[in-house]
Image (cartoon, rainbow, N blue to C red; front, side, top):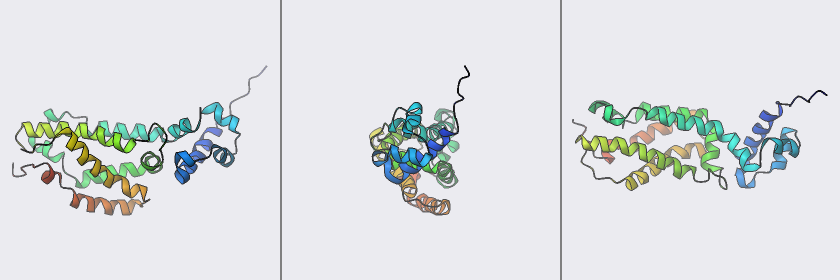
Length: 208
């Protein structure tokens, strides 16, 4: 007896429909029935692939989460202790570095928006806090290295760094939550770089 060939064309239809529904209503108010109807599949076909609504949302944002944390690891892959004083100082510059962040996030626009504003009720409900905390840990390593070298005399705790990074990343999240175009985001980046001066905040001696 010949086995039936699985219809893999269903999978992207389900994910596309789920993304639209989650973006429109958020996780908690999203309807699996609406997702199935839009994708033209039965609920049985959906449950063969996903355990439920949360499993489906995790599939929708999976590529974004992976890309985001890979990008973080790439940006912080060089141990701060191996950097020259000049390179360590440049790690705190905004400008082009921040623009690179915004452009990267825009490539994963929909998944990122879901993570920061549509994932309440899922394992990603605290994504904004968790991401800021992860960034605070990595950022603090660079700050401590700079302090050990006498590049700054500021006394900042890891808790304070988390607060600073929470405020910093809120200014990154908001343009996406408000559905800015890439052009608007680039203009926002310029304003953000004027507002947030890490050299001033962390007490760096830029004359060195």
